[in-house]
Length: 207
Length: 201
Image (cartoon, rainbow over all chains, first blue to last red; front, top):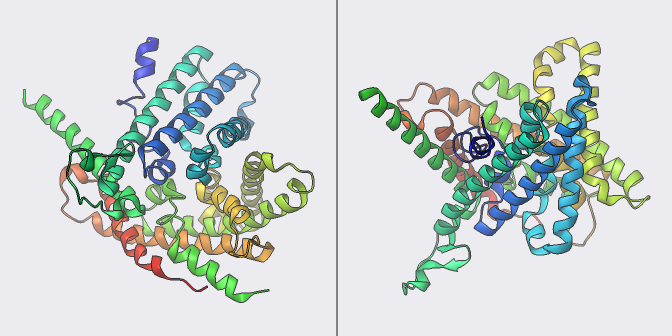
């Protein structure tokens, strides 16, 4: 597998959220607006790259039996760095993501990649894999938050689409930005992906 | 000691801001372990146990170590270490002294370290403030951990009961498995939204 394939596998084919169903808490909790989704995706990507590179660099020195606590400490260190950076430079984003920034530590995507990939592969490959998975996570967050923000408030990335088109009086469904909307959007997106997969399989079988 | 505070915490973390359905904490075990009622109950009990002890331990760490030495920026890293070692310790203790309980809950314990509800409740205990600007005290933190775990168990058991029945339902092929689980949780969450107008203050 070359670097390009390694990078792009995380985008759709092995998308960590939509295909592997990892990291579900943040992908439902912070996706009330696209700006939040992108912010969360990039923060998690930064932590993922940092921890994957560090773990693959030190893989010879980490004893196998104590690897999980060591991974968690590495990840927590990067999360603390990102948390403080966001508080200092983007306080608005830091406030709206709130609790879910420290909770990046227990995001299964990051520990999962450390365990399944970075601990066994070279530094370069781990960095590329982490970048791809991080982008895949961001894509999933943006997809979910686009649906929720549009249905919930009628705007996309803060731009009120209906007003800009000259249609007044659109009111979003508040439920979509409340918790049930997150579950519903996720269910419908997963259902669509499964439908698409079955359709492709049926087509390939028919020929 | 103000009992109305304890009542508010209990109603809030079980119903109004249920950890799973209102705050989105602990979605992974909620979706992953809710296929069978029996394992859902086991997981729920283990989470109640760990969340209570983790609330106590992290509260003490915050008050007696982090605040006196001005180390609040190490909160995330110290809390996750405390939780990971606590879970490990509970596992070892149970294996030696309570083999019956261990055989019932043991397999769920390693999964709990990465359950966001546990780290979430630890941080919420520190961050939550009453209207007057006072923080949770020791008993309120422990109680918040316990009732948060009860709320998690309630959601998990409800979900498992429905999913056991769903096994027999005639679903569209493309919604089988995860998609219908999410849509079911959307419906449960909608029902829980009915509690959102409730207040005691």
